[in-house]
Length: 471
Ligand code: AMP
Ligand code: ZN
Image (cartoon, rainbow, N blue to C red; front, side, top):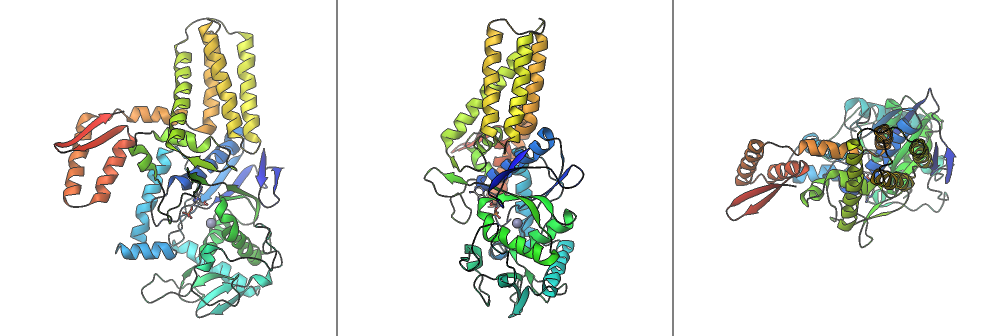
């Protein structure tokens, strides 16, 4: 298995450092709104990484994905909504779980929240270790990391020590720092802000400290094998995580750093919640697309290349999936006939090639190419009567193997089973939605619509009432 490592800017052979188990940390969602499909591009790509490590490379994986459930935005938004912070972020964690299930993401081993007490305590312990090692200072009740104390600072982002530019999220800190490049570890809080006091004074954690502390706690110390996230996190977030973790322990924090390129809009703008130009998974389902087509579209471009999102791209993904499932249906219908050695050889070669492509820094487009070559070959063999039942079974097993990594065929199958929603249930949900709208609970009404859309039922509101149809 080879992986591109942002730290060295090279592809390198990858093996876990301890007992065949990959210890991997992935930065998860900041839960102040429903995650958008740009976030899910990163999560789908990292799901493919996880599946490749397990099913192609044969390692076990212990993966942690956090929820950032306290920061400036979650606090502001929960206040605006007049809902306590924890309750407010619960909603978007629930929405993440729904969307992750729709997109067929394998559950990871731990989903810690920054505001869980054991996590806050481990953040405070790390800050205390940093204080003991002389990396911090206090100002107006906040604790800062002094980057001048760490000669290696900037090694991930390849910034020279003097020329580091503060990133957007650092810039927005309204706190007093000795040096604009320093970053906050523990923030003094205002009168009605959520506040915790576990040993470094009352306040709340800075954004970066949570990932360092939770990775350390839940992955059993340094160095972890892989730390991953979207490319926007290289600086300052991941650079600062390295500073905190290595400043506290004196050991390498993570051996590999994996970064997924962005999902862009057609015009080239980054899709982002704060720019207000983001589509969510339910938005896509409401347009009549299946989550399996979205998953396919998101994974079909190499993770280190930017991906432009278009509806036409989703149509193409749907076409590709249909071609694939049609071939599988044909294979399942083949009856009788002996195995043909040339078919066996061809299928075995495709299996090997697929695995080789994936093991080469997750070359998914290459893997898809191999898979569709096989689809073409098998269709022709069936047309020519040159495919026996034993060949068909072998080929079917090969597609099952591809799908352990891609996760699109199984997802499509699950969608078709779900699409058999009984009429009484549809009508009951439409009535519930009507009641929700009558009490102006549009969020609940939208959830019902999205839930049905996810199961292949599309609603249309007309002057005479709501109509529905199956896709
Ligand atoms: P956030 O909720 O902003 O903390 O982001 C959660 C994850 O989504 C991080 O790994 C980000 O790097 C990633 N991300 C944010 N926007 C995009 C995008 N447009 N394309 C791909 N990944 C993104
Ligand atoms: Zn993080």
